[in-house]
Length: 552
Image (tube, rainbow, N blue to C red; front, side, top):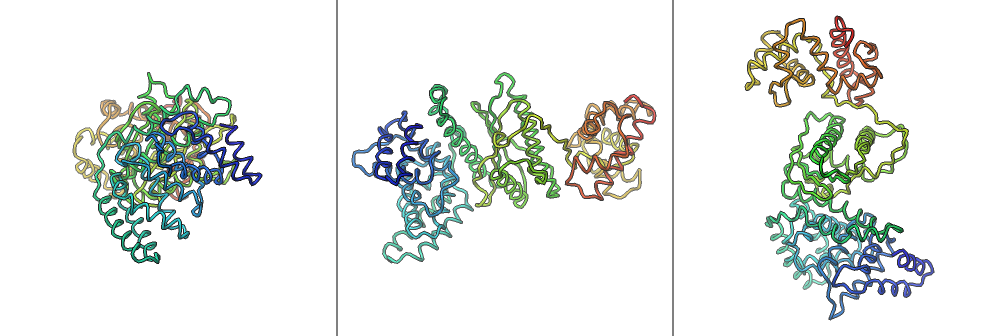
């Protein structure tokens, strides 16, 4: 492969275009199966320059026009995925026209391997239609009109279709040939009508792409390419496209929530379920930090949709409003484009992702994350990967605490009483709230603070159900309860973070005067005033815990 790519680029640099095309023809070979030549050509499409891509697709287009040519579905898929996995094709590149010839070879867009690629292809077509290049736009229009009946069988995001419809209408208005304009318009209306009604139902779409990629680039193939590593790079590029496409497919099938995909490599099969749960928790926490920064008062909950083995992949949905979904999707999109350098002024989102990566790499895991929102501009987003972030050996993860994990409820006696009321009324939050407010005669908003405090201390879970710890507390004497809460605090996220931040082993060693600085550093999303109130609570709790329990 290196020889082929080097030769093509050599002739390009010398302006010997004919010889460069000859070299590309040599590697095309037999298109009826995925062999060494087909893999080499895929590498040219993925790793070559834009000029390499234009020549490669140009030559391929001419080969496909030959009357006796035959091309295998797996070959078509590999070439399609190779091109769509690139992120640097300019809007006016001639490759956009040549690529349509390959796209037209797909005989059944309902097949899972091809249906999986439609989110990325729709985004590709959208750029071609809006490029300002009349020839590219009209050729794209012709593809949708000519092959739309087949292409409509694949799953499409309704908002994306609406966006494409608007663009095709604009291009149609500029077509000079009125007869052709009328013909295209009729065919396009049929395509959009059918595509809008398509209900895709083949569950193989979740695993087909990954399974085929694993087959094409199996261990033996990668081992033979150890010297150059080109096949591994191609596989990685396409795998990231698949990850992003799965997120987009999830959005198509359930557009009422943000769709997310987490792909895990290097997991120990014997201990995978524990590892997966741990990773999902870390990713969920990372997303929550992003949400907290925007002051979205929403506790994230991942809803598993699908998971399958191999390169372990988990499909998730996150119930969020449209604005919240777009905010999260934009944050991930910004991370997918960033150039990582040591920078003290990095945003909280970047720092949070660095911390998450550090934690994941401690377990020698590679994790890719992709999201998709209902917004056509944020439907297909390049995944973010732990491999994108360089980690120095001397870098340690920053201590981070979410705002929801830092209490704002100064009176521990009220915390104890609320935990007791929850045990007495385990199925009625409204009753718990009413009794608590009546006993203490405080403002209604105070209930929310104390309710969160009992959750932070692990006395009730986040569904307001009393925990074992809460029941143990209820049975202790009054003198024993504060000591028990001290141990619960140490086990909490904020308590453990405070010990680590101070680099001490007991609560008695913590300096209460540093509470404000601790809160500001570990949770920079909090405003100064809110941070001060949270710090006051921590100091109040610490004083209660250490008054008679100096050894804690």
